[in-house]
Length: 472
Ligand SMILES: Nc1ncnc2c1ncn2[C@@H]1O[C@H](COP(=O)(O)OP(=O)(O)O)[C@@H](O)[C@H]1O
Ligand SMILES: N[C@@H](CCC(=O)OP(=O)(O)O)C(=O)O
Image (tube, rainbow, N blue to C red; front, side):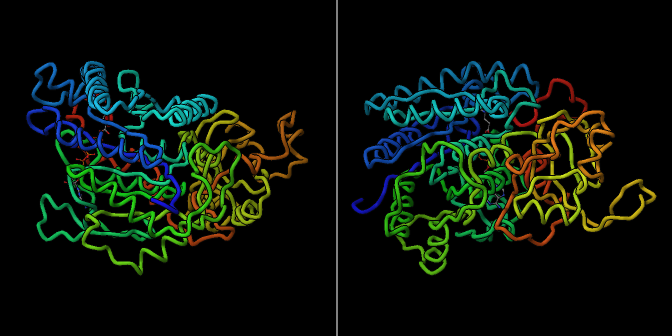
């Protein structure tokens, strides 16, 4: 690998790659090959993180439970039983090759708290610097639906973004993403390179294996998150992990000349909207370079040329929005031009939130001069363009919206800030310095929120609302 720089590589293994779908016995050959591949990558100088599902699957086998239960407490108990066996399996396999590993268990709450997010980032980077392979899973035993990632595809994308990885491998039981589910459609066509997820056409609506949580849809959500942070994302088959080495080499070969030091472990602050020259280079190479026979079938999602990283990524994907601010097109233009959000540009507010909680920012098509029959001050489509942390609570914004900042003291009796949100507390999903064509708000909300895309996953029987976890 002379002339190529080391890469940060995150490898995510779904339950379908860790235990047999029917017997729940561990797939030892796959796990061993993954171990060999990860150690080989380490020897080539790359930094490797594994995101491993399988705690529940291993727990099912340990307790001789045939079917995945539906109730939260049972699933959490099985995860607790399975997680330690899963780690002991990984540890014994890696130990044969003298490779130290570490366990990292995360919940969404850990990510939502800024200092805990930074601590997790620092710990993982420290482990990588020590030559350790961190093995990440969701802390299923503690996570209830409000604080769940819900699926490890999303968790792996957030982990990859957190450490500025170069590559995320979503290893699964099919070769790649197809235009429809290959399990049920023998004529499904592979999709090899995705330059723009926004224009991707593929049917991912059907569920996958009986143990996996999200099928392909959560992998698409994960690819969207990771590529937006500048991480090339690959979907490939886990039963031949040697593919990872070939794909890494292929991607490195497309990346000559070597670029500056590995992005992994960069401290903040970073930017929202910097150019990703590697992405531009890769895009031009990938569309003109056909996959050689040696390169196994896989789907490669190219990274955004304008990656959103660090605090800006965290505002977008680390926090759950508690409400929505509707702003007029003039205010959006000002925000793109780097101004903060003034109350004058806010036409409506929805939801109940406190200061410094995350909200959606939606741009309305047209502001009305007087409220319509629906009581709204706007008409037409509203487009979600980003998220923000606000300086005022929802009840305060409802009183000051549409007013000049100078009027705030009279309206509220105090003024904490002239801005509803500071510019550094606002992050856009895709920011290239110019406004982009509108997409209806419902579409965008659905594609940015993994929970919406899991609607088809058979997780709970009707009538079992209480005590049923979504996506565990
Ligand atoms: N368009 C598609 N292309 C490929 N696979 C698809 C597609 N739509 C649905 N799938 C299903 O997604 C499954 C992989 O998801 P899942 O079972 O959740 O895996 P994992 O446990 O690896 O996360 C495949 O086995 C396949 O049946
Ligand atoms: N955290 C859970 C797995 C959740 C999950 O996303 O599973 P999968 O869809 O198989 O990657 C476990 O360890 O069993």
